[in-house]
Length: 93
Image 1 (cartoon, rainbow, N blue to C red):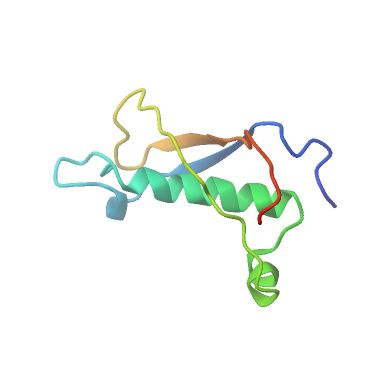
Image 2: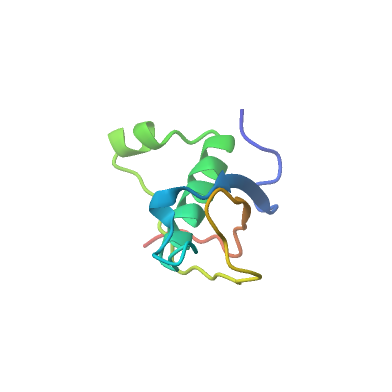
């Protein structure tokens, strides 16, 4: 079943694992993109889009840009709340 409001914000909780941190025990900056991708994937799943089915049909959703706001350093075993929102929806050419 597809979600009613496809453009509403979506939040996903994820845990910081050892592999996500640097030598200082803080999440290495590029790993925030992994958390963002997990949130995006879960949002698509909530909307009824299975990643394996999309791949099988040679379809994909392109991320044009992303933005991160750092409120405080994330550390090992922290639980993060990652939000995602569609801000623009167009047909691809």
